[in-house]
View (cartoon, rainbow, N blue to C red):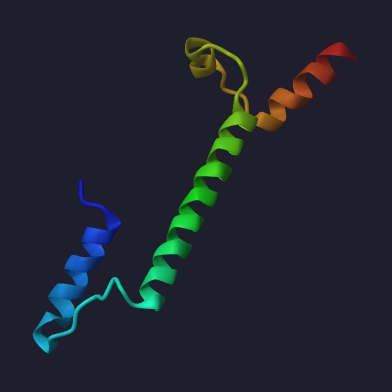
Amino acid sequence: MCSLDSLFSQFVEACFGPFAAQLSSKADPYRELEKEAADLMSCLHEKLEKRRHALHTGLALNVRTRVKLTTHELKVSPIVYLE
C-alpha cells in the first residue's frame, strides 16, 4: 500500500512534471504542512482510541453480535425494567 506522501508526490509529478515543477521538501511551507498533517493524524488517532474506549462494553464478541438494541435503548432498558 502506498503512503499518502508517495501518492501526493506521484500526483504532483503527473500534473506538474511537464512544467518542470516539483516538490521541495526543504522549503518551510512544505515542512509546516507535513508537521500539521502529522499533528492532525495523531489527534485523530487519539480521538479514535478515546471513542473506542468509551464504546467498549466489556461484552464478549459473540454476545455483542446478538445484541440488537441501540445505545440509547440499552441505557434506558435497565431503568424501565427496574421500575
